[in-house]
Length: 211
Figure 1 (spheres, rainbow, N blue to C red):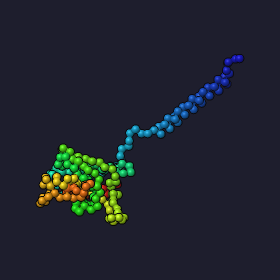
Figure 2: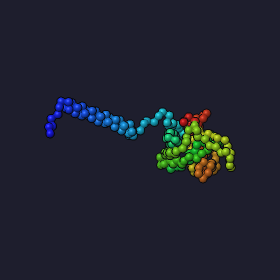
Figure 3: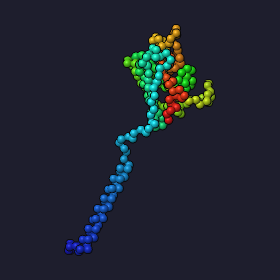
Figure 4: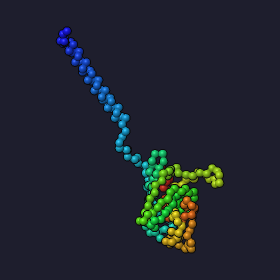
C-alpha cells in the first residue's frame, strides 16, 4: 500500500494540526484564568479607614498627686462581627492589679457599669490586657425586668479601679481618709478607688465615636 500523500491530503493534515494547537492554547488560557480567579490571596487587605480608634486614659481625682505619671491608652479594633479592646497603663505602683469597666459616666456616681477585665501593672508599673466584645456607639445594657429594671442605657466611658483598697490608701491617694475607701468595682465587689477614666470626653464618651 502506498504511503504517499496527495497535496490535498497534506493541506488537510496541516489544517487539523493547526486547529488542535489553537484549541490547546485556548484551553490552557482558560484553565490558567480559572485557577487565578479561584486562588486565595496570600497577603491580607489593609484595614479600611475607621476600623480602629485610640484614645487616652487620664488620672482620676487625687491620683495625679500620688502618681504623677499615671496614665493609659485604649485601642479598639473592629474584628468582623465584634471588636477587640486593648487597655495599656503606665506610671502605676509596681505589681499592682486594676479592674477595667465600661461605664455610663466617667466620674461619680458612674452609672451603669460593666466589668471587662483585670489589668496587671508589672515591676515597671506598666501593663496591658485585651478583651473581645462590642465597644462602640452600640454598647448598652438593658434590664426589662427582674431584681432591677431599667431602659436601654449606653455605656460610652472606660474606668479603671485599684483592685486592692489598701494600695491607694497607703500611697496617699485618698487625702483626708482615715481608712481605705472600698468600692464595688472588682469581682469580689471589694475594690479601691478609681485610678483612670475618660473624663476628657465631655459630651459623650469615646465609645460613642466608634462604629
